[in-house]
Image (cartoon, rainbow, N blue to C red):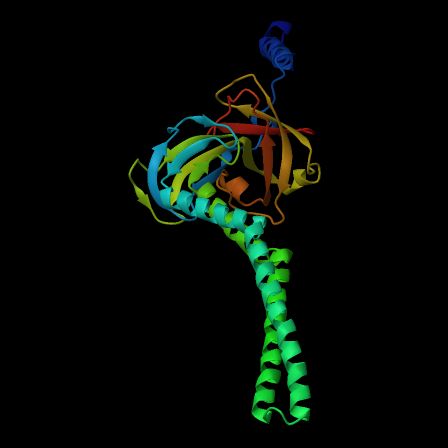
Length: 321
């Protein structure tokens, strides 16, 4: 049997394919390409922020509005002012009453009480003298027992009057009772609290998202006046598989990549890790992923420039990824 010639050998037909494969492998290695199954997949989510719904506990008529929707507010900055004319009048009344109680009795009142005490004391001395003479006259049978009893009764009554007058004088000298002062101060503090509720202010740095009232509106107690976005606390909740949970701890640093800012990574930190597994979180799409257990991880983000906003889509890269 004859051997095939060298020219008919199939080795030559594989040479171009081998060369192309080698070139492709070199190119992919230079580009750090990985098959789709091995590419880096980062958990994704949507930026969220805390909200505050502010209101007045007492209600009233809207008198002034100091801010509009979209305004950035600082801590304590006023948003809405409610009418409080009657509360201010009540506050002045309570303040005047407290000042009177703290001042105590006037010196003229104390002097008048002392004069009454001294006058009744003088009458008592005379009544004692009359009773003594009455005793002597009764012993000599000069007066009747009725006249003697009248003198004794008058002296006893004046003794009680003197004790009462002295007690009134001492009471004025002692001043106002501490319990009455405490009661007046409490009533004044209650009025001040109601007045503070008439001005609805920002509890912290925030953005006024929704303003629900207009001037002239009459609000019931606890009716919502505005919705505030607390932009100093931005966070995203992502879901990680249980195989990666052991490498994530509270306080770990994390990088946040926003679609709105390609190529930039924002600093973040793990704030909360779910205690229970979930099977179908909202950002899982494929059937292969839906059958895996995942855990929710809440990441707090730093936003010093104010560029991140609620609702942005982001990816989270943990330190060991």
